[in-house]
Image (spheres, rainbow, N blue to C red):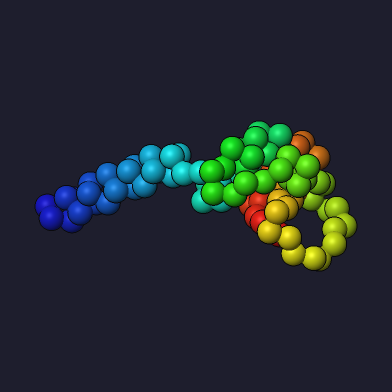
Length: 91
C-alpha cells in the first residue's frame, strides 16, 4: 500500500512540474519543436535579455555561421518545416 501512495505522490509531482514548465520563459522554456517565428517572438518578449529584433536570427539547421560569441545575439536553427531543432541560446 505504501508503494502505491508513493507512486501517486510522484505522479502528482510530475504534473506540478509540467505546469511549472509551461509558466517558464526563455531561456528556461524549451523552444524545440516550436515554429521558428513563434520562438523568435517568445525570445523577444523575454524580460531577462533585452535583445533587438535584428539580432535574433532564424537560420536553416545546416547554415554556416561565424564562431564569435555575442551576448546580444540569438540564433534559431530550424528544419525544412520551419520547426526549431535545437534550443536557441545567446551567443
